[in-house]
Image (tube, rainbow, N blue to C red; front, side, top):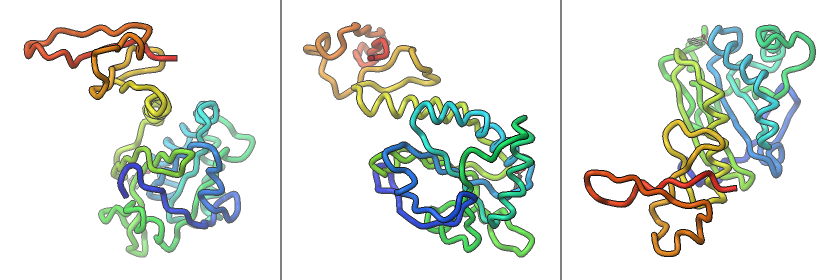
Length: 220
Ligand code: BEZ
């Protein structure tokens, strides 16, 4: 699947019952993220962090949905450990977990990690992240191996960039955070630039003499 492709729609079994992905997304953004297995240490730290950050995802209009090859009763049992690890020992996990026992989705979405196998020798899912827009198109994807936990604060930062750059003629530089200066898109001509960026544009000198490092305050 390429960036910009329509994310496949499918019906899945989850801890919130059966659901159809596109219907679940509705007019929201969505983060679909997989983990190798329930009751494993790195996965518990990741989902615990997701529980703590869920209000931040909600603020940005992003629905969360997790996935692994374990079954729904296993997800439900493990969720209690995740909530406890996240120091939220009351209440349910604030997002569903998909059960992909058949690996149909894992294969379709190329999330299989051939080096990780369950006790029966079947391959497990890697740590994939798919960010899907309200138009159901793929905006960003990442694949991490089982042994490397992700940073979900970084994923929130990335969502801020995706949502900003979807509407404004800017790109965000390395490590950018909300409110920091942005880069003018290379496709914007210098002529008439003040009208496009009323907050002003600063060009940084470089040895090549080419005026391509154009900074502007984050547009409203
Ligand atoms: C973990 O979540 O800790 C993990 C899962 C599978 C392989 C390695 C680590």
